[in-house]
Length: 229
Ligand SMILES: C[S@@+](CC[C@H](N)C(=O)[O-])C[C@H]1O[C@@H](n2cnc3c(N)ncnc32)[C@H](O)[C@@H]1O
Image (cartoon, rainbow, N blue to C red; front, side, top):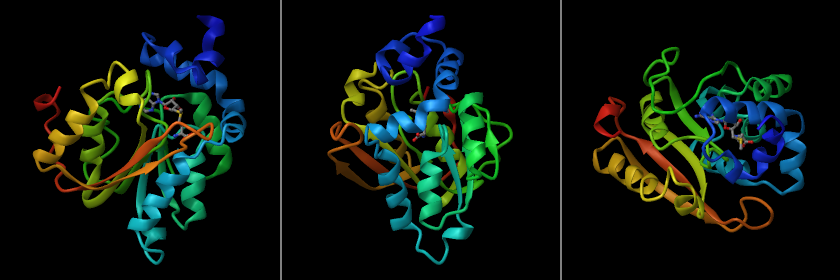
């Protein structure tokens, strides 16, 4: 397992069965080359999410919009948000190596070394943010379904949650199979968020790998996680 880190970073199935801490270590080991690898694979999920945020928050308000980037990694999404006029961005990710790379870029105000997995992140107060984004965050060993509930808690009513999910993940990833989409719908039925839209793209990475960018408007933040998991 010691030498498998760099493979599990971009061969997703190898993360199956790893503890969350081990997954964070995989990314720490790969952090130094992360941007280069994914740029060479024409990674685009983060670009589509930044476009989704810019479409919702008009240019004249963007510099005061507070955003949490969940599974922030090295800050590739935050760079795209800055390019569109957003500047109040916090990152959250459990990987020390990814944080180190991100902080070199100066794109985050604060960076929380935390897992988003449904537990209440004590440092972060309910309704702290106007927006929450997550790119390349739904995959084997990354955000569990319950993370959606903590996302809803952290965003103010009227705020936007925007994340991408490649189509194949809904079935290929055991954690999500028959669970992720039903939970997204149940959260809506229970009045915590409302789907603004989902936009389909053909090429999340490798000029292939189609998926959707989901945009949810938060309606309420009094989330009772135990009711769902
Ligand atoms: C594929 S990278 C995506 C990074 C970044 N969002 C991007 O677009 O490049 C996935 C990131 O999720 C982080 N991660 C893994 N489990 C997590 C969890 N439960 N909560 C938050 N981040 C997590 C990893 O440490 C890694 O940095």
